Image 1 (cartoon, helix red, strand yellow):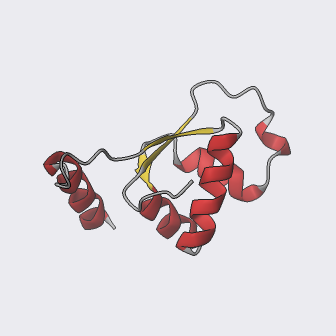
Image 2 (cartoon, one colour; image 1 turned 30 degrees about the vertical axis):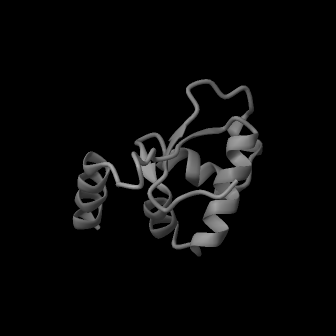
Length: 93
């Protein structure tokens, strides 16, 4: 699964796994994604390369630990609301 930088990640509402048995990276992503965040933002907060973060998030999504909300583009035009949220997030960094 190829994740867009602006794809939004949130913790799954129901996790049937004991998070104490998960890797520290998985635990950190679950903790940070309690608030919906972009893949790029998670990568920056974790101080982890973007490629590594993408792989971890994709693996976690396959296990049902997080939900990914890919942006939908209408006729090749980015959603203005999405761009405003990304800009707002960048300003907070």
